[in-house]
Image 1 (cartoon, helix red, strand yellow):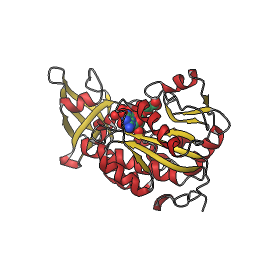
Image 2 (spheres, helix red, strand yellow; image 1 turned 120 degrees about the horizontal axis):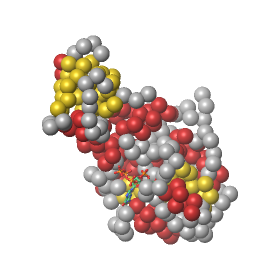
Image 3 (spheres, helix red, strand yellow; image 1 turned 90 degrees about the horizontal axis):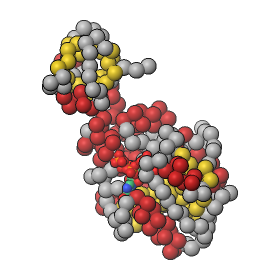
Image 4 (tube, helix red, strand yellow; image 1 turned 90 degrees about the vertical axis):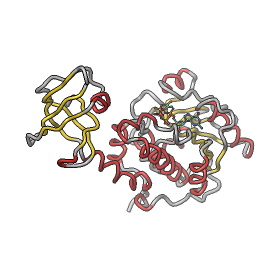
Length: 299
Ligand SMILES: Nc1nc2c(ncn2[C@@H]2O[C@H](COP(=O)(O)OP(=O)(O)OP(=O)(O)O)[C@@H](O)[C@H]2O)c(=O)[nH]1
Ligand SMILES: C=C(OP(=O)(O)O)C(=O)O
């Protein structure tokens, strides 16, 4: 049993009130959150996943020995209540001016109570977050006035820190790794902190997070998710009508299955030629299989 032994039951709360870091976690209203997950998860599951990610992120953060408290900046009432129940403080998104304004407001909220706090912004979409890896990142960050950790794609940022007395000055959104670097924050070069880098925006990101191992709330929902993904399979394009953007594929057992324009558009292709190998995603099994996505098979 290692330090992460409580994985499946949920993390034990860190009760060390002398820990140095206060974290600020921003969360959009669930109605809007994680929009890039909608094509692969569907709308209802997308919202539940957005909350589960935030809960697993906040629970892991609160279990980290370097973290004293977590402030979640959100205007979502039910999400705020669920995260408060885990031990987070909730601040409303009073600036209502986007992610960076929300983070700056969260940092001010922390320092209104504890002026000498070291503050770090942490995305709410890190369902694989492990307290021990977060601690490594924060310990490294503690050596610099401002520091940041690039996300798994190397384009964005999952954590930005500011030492006591230093403004957070967040530039999240899009290519924020380059922006944080240009703004003078020190990039944290640590290897072995994949769980802190693994933000989940798309279905592929979710699969990558499931491979790392997610927290219990995301894991519970992943039955539904893996149920959806269980129908990921290979097939061969059989017919395609460019007028209607619909057609059919042959499964590898020779069964023909139709797909509609929504499934074709979900795969992002412009054209499909009979005989091409494709990857399909669907719901249901056997005669009930409904294809939700068709794309080219790439290895
Ligand atoms: N409080 C607050 N949080 C925000 C706001 N915009 C984004 N966030 C949060 O900031 C983090 C990164 O946000 P985005 O990648 O822009 O949005 P997302 O909901 O994760 O995903 P998409 O809808 O697919 O862009 C997530 O934790 C969001 O919930 C905002 O205006 N206010
Ligand atoms: C907001 C950011 O994250 P995402 O990849 O979720 O857009 C970011 O990386 O700055």
